[in-house]
Image 1 (spheres, one colour):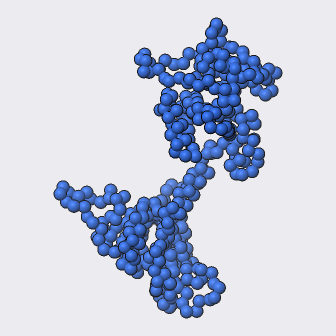
Image 2 (cartoon, one colour):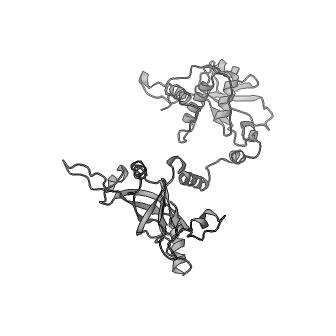
Image 3 (tube, one colour):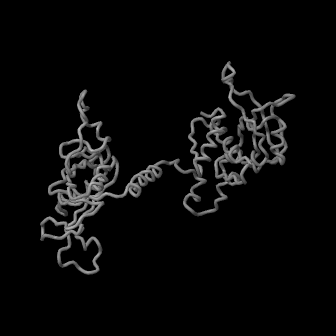
Length: 376
């Protein structure tokens, strides 16, 4: 924009233009609302300002880009004084352009000079049109950006000015800057990180080292975590008694229920490493709750005869820790993942499960298998 200083205390003049920035009109920044602080805080609960600009020097396509700014998009306001004719060679950009202050804000809505909202997101604040009345069209090149300031920074600026250690920052802002939408997501990411840091259970203990990038990833595996489940309800993973016995070839099966023929579903209790009979598992069969009297109420049961390796993967997936299932196409990885999701949903109905795949095709395949089961 080529800012040029017009003398001490005078407003800078701009000889050029920029696609991503525009000049704020003289006295174009006005604070319209300062909310009272919340209980226990010394900064305002919110600060709203109006910023007036004129896009008459911008091309129509650039003007349309300004009009397409959405709610919560982040913009910046600069106090740019210009360096004058005595600019120092080799000075940093702030000194070269006479940049004094930078303040960020979030877009609330945009209006034209007549008060008509530019985008539909602001229409909810506008009086609805009467029957037969056409929707108001945006006119002119002047725009009023209603922005939400950083309340903490605003309080610091006001306190500094009140104590005589600073100037009126917001009265001297003269440039409004926007960013590309795909690059302008830093505030949302920081807010997400902040919320996760303020939540005690955001990341489990066994994932801390791996998440931070140090330590042994194998320490988060099933066999190395201290949170391994002692008893697991495998639901309909096993088709029958023989299938269960074949799925644990390295364990002796001890039946806890007395019956001539054991029928699925089964609960399996695994021994602890310090137990004397570490190779023995205890199995009990039970009668699941009756879903209803009608045939259509009966859920679709598993028909896949999982191999011992797949059963071990299902067991690991139901336990806290990291589980990686690797295999060539056609080895049942999707069926195994679907069975893990099925058991997780029915064993922990109050928890949420996030599915992430490398492609939409893989996600659709997984969803199709889940829809065939009683997972809504």
